[in-house]
Length: 106
Image: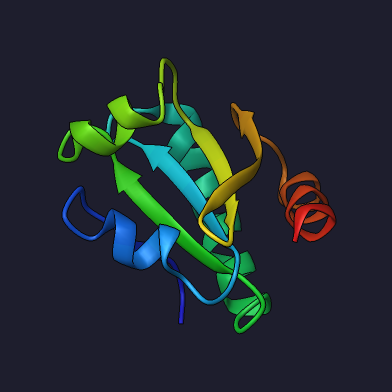
């Protein structure tokens, strides 16, 4: 399935109302560390399909969602479970670290 692009308009439906946990990656095209973790998140989205959804929110195109979450720096990652944030982290990390964080939180 891969990652899902989420907008301000679809944030509640895709993230808060999801039947499975959702990892939300707040990113931007100009952000180097965001581009570093992009391929790892795509791989994890495929590997963890059915267990977790990985959503990407472009903060430049969707400032309301970023503002609502209090995003000050990117990449910023949040895990939502049953509509609530259960974990978050900032900055780039290797795939193994991201996978460990996601699996321990869902």
